[in-house]
Length: 305
Image (tube, rainbow, N blue to C red; front, side):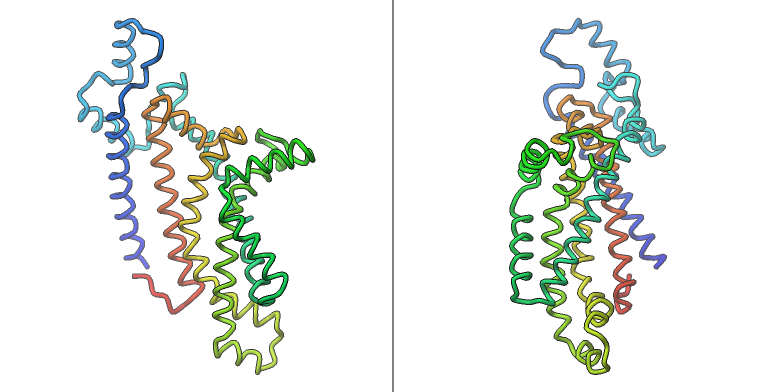
């Protein structure tokens, strides 16, 4: 276990450094700069701004200086949000994005596993057909299209939820449902496939022969083996939820990291964009590591090397 964690830590640090390096140089290759605008700026003012943020220094010196500060978890000041550092912006936006992601993941796992179990147990029934049709629709319809339809129906027509904002539970429900719907569809199909495979194995027939109830066989014995494909999918699902939240936060006007990242990318706010990218990279590595660790809990035969 310790060797596995140390190896993962080494790969995480290497990956974060590669992502940092690529992001740093790619942002500066793109034409334009953080202080370019449609209106002409006095040359003296332009030079003062560049000197303040050390943009007048050689590129490699900027890279080394910013890398050193990043190692100390200091992402520097935001170029566009005056009087705010990147750390302060991330501290404000991260809880919102994390809450949205957690709600969406809980919704996707709960609905997906439940629908998959029911479809597998009631194979070829109306329930099976209905759940799989809804799962396919959830996968096929992009979440931004689903969000637009949900706003029209649930906000303007039926007035069940607010259109935007943050701070109340009802403001979280709609974006979380739209964000988690595609992943609920994938999880439902994976759970159904895994359950159908496990229900035909010998140890399940042995459990029935011993007189165990159908509910206990399905939930305690079959489900555990059927969840391995679902656990494998949670890593990519986390990546999808993180990237999907970038668009939905704009649609629902949520002040999370996604909206900050889009603004930073369009306005050439180098430090803010870099901070958001590195935080997302770190979260993806942590979630993938937790998924791998959960293999050993679900299936003791799995050995982490």
